[in-house]
Amino acid sequence: MPAARFAFPAAVLLTLALLWELAVWGFQVPKWILPSPSAIWQAFWEMRALLAVHAAQSMLEVAIGVSTAVAAGVAVAAAINFSPWLRRAVYPLLVISQTVPILALAPLLIIWFGFGIAPKVIVVTLFCFFPIAINTSDGLTSTEPELIDLFRSMGATWLQIWRKVRLPAALPYFFSGLKIAATYSVTGAIVGEWVGAKQGLGIYMLRSSAAFQTAQVFSAIAITSLLSIALFLSVFALERTVMPWHFQER
Amino acid sequence: MTLLEVHALSKSFDGSARRGSSSRTQAVVDLTFTVDAGEFLTIIGPSGCGKSTLLRMLAGLAQPDAGSIALQGQPLPDASARQGRFGYMPQRDALLPWRSVIDNAILGAELAGGSRDAARAEARQLLPLFGLDGFENAWPSELSGGMRQRAALLRTFLAGYDILLLDEPFGALDALTRRVLQQWLLGVRDRFSKTILFITHDVDEALLLGDRVLVFSPRPGRIAAQLSVDLPHPRNEDTVLETDFLALKRNALAHLKL
Image: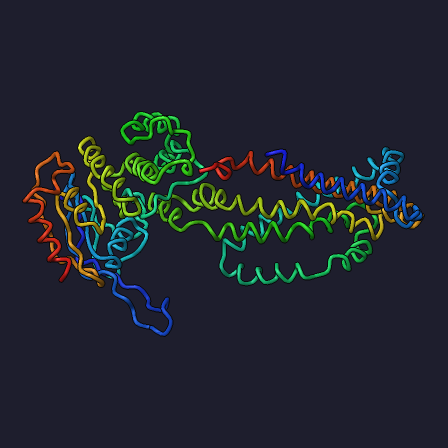
């Protein structure tokens, strides 16, 4: 990728940070209301060991949650494409499930599943399941009928048609869903931790905020963003490895 | 020797796809013809005359309402019994975008459970003849339109069926590429003893390639005429300018107007 694609947004970001730093200094804004970027960096550096522990906990929840969402999303997508009856019954429910405010559900999950890792994993899964299921399902329906005709004319079994046509044809759609899911997932973990946890970036933010350690809150927010970006880029790299044909320039 | 016998084949579709019409649309009516082993039969007719429907019925992708299909004297009444018996090539090339040229070419052998390596070796030998030398590992998206069609034809030839059903294989190509591929197909055909059913809506193409031409009427498709093309082989780009050819063309055009 050309360096310019990163250089421009980076320059804008740096300029904004510089203006922010000057404004905080110029207007003498108290640190607990709005810390300067340098103060945020300092808060990060002082707490880096603790932050790593919390970040690791959040990423563990993300890893389990995303894996569960992938397994469940692909399974549901395959099931509703297998039977038109199931499709009519389940597809609208999928859409409705996405309208449920997960934020309101999170405290209930704590009541049902306790303060352990389970409710956080469930919140991450809820965040990630929908984009994966819907995209994969759309991918499975969009197989070119000519390809299926060709296979049927060659006497292929339905298992061969699924393995060699429908699943590979759905891959680009699956990865679109996974990229959306990856960007949601860290936020999902934070939401899950927000309502009660022993460890994780969410509970770290909550505690820092309660102690008016605003610089620590900002440093945790920055880490959340960076982790989300890193996840997105990993999916992007995986996509290119798995589907080199999809990125071939004509 | 008669390889394929088609008798009184008819097919209609539900009109329900079109709003407000509950009637059935006749696609083809009472098609009766035979194809000899090694024959190149071209089918020509206006668009929508049911040519593709005929090939889909032969390939086992559609079931006729009436009539019979027999291959080597064996009746094949069930669509599933016809699947895996004809080398069908759909209108668009239907190459799998996630497979290299060589892995697209071996699809027939692979689905039949054969050795992929043996099939690849066989395909590799044919790459130069199909103008795909050096492209065995290319993705279909890297090929030109003409090369894609040749790759799809290679897949169809390699699948090892006696009869190839080619549905307007050159229909989407520009006139120049099409002419090159017609000459090329004439050459390839001389090297293989394949029986070919070839659909086209180009009169020149039908007469240049075919040993015999079936002229279809507009919908519903019926066989309006069967013309023998007694032009000598090898045929080339000059064939279309000869007097005999022009006489045949005049005859075919007259039948097409109806």
